[in-house]
Amino acid sequence: MKKVVTIQDISCFGKCSLTVALPVISAMGIETAVIPTAVLSTHTGGFQGFTFRDLTSDIPAIADHWKSLGLRFDGIYTGYLGSIEQVRIVSDFFGDFGREDNFIVVDPAMADGGRLYTGFSQDFVAEMRKLCSRADYIIPNMTEASFLLDIPYTEDYDQAYAEKVLRRLADLGCPMPVLTGVHFDGEKQGAAAYDSRTGEFCYHFRKTVDRTLHGTGDIFSSVFTGAVTLGMPLSQAVRTAVDYTADCIEATAGSFDEVWYGSCFELCLDKLIGYVKNR
Image (cartoon, rainbow, N blue to C red; front, side, top):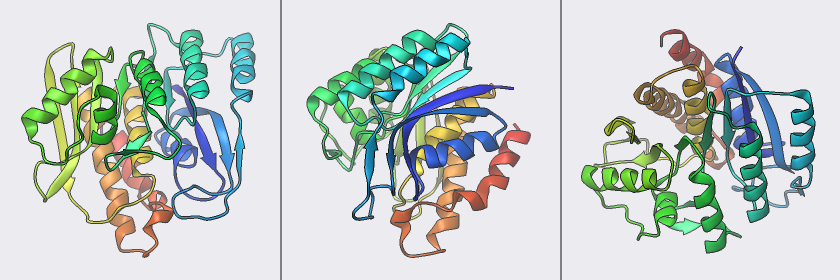
């Protein structure tokens, strides 16, 4: 049985980060180990008065225990990391558990809409850039790519620009960058990826749904990680992640108004299992 470890925070209520990654990757038939970086009573996108407990100091002890047990993983996947210290600890984790026969996925979750998330600085960006250089796959949106590359953010771009961004992301040291939220018109949205080893680009799009949902990036990154773990080539992993994310958005958009709560990914798990069985 394939095994993945994912390192990110967990919200006790709400749908993002580990609350998404654990069930989604597990549904793909992959054993999913977790290292929570923080515990929140709810996610932060719309709820007020949430509690927060930082677990940074627990991560090295977990890693040391796992090393003593000789645990090995087919993939390592990181999501939102809340501080420079956490990024550095995760970098050490890569050194301890990364191998030639496994892979690392980094979702540099730190920005959107042209701005860094609250509490992040250029120093954090610099550390995240170093972490991305150690990954086999990185999954930024266009805002995060702009910060990683220190280029102006734009929403007005074409295919040639997207490919230029992907090439420059690969130059950071990651051989297979994936760019999410890609759109060349108002009709479709999806993702683009670049395999620097072959020089090939791949794209996949679905019809744009004009709603913003919390946690869809976590869904995409989780499905992508699971797909790569199962041996899907880059283009198929991108297609599977785009399709399932779009399925979840479409299932949620007409269900309730408070879409900041998260997507109804549970309603679409049968489709995800179908994508896996039919690969």
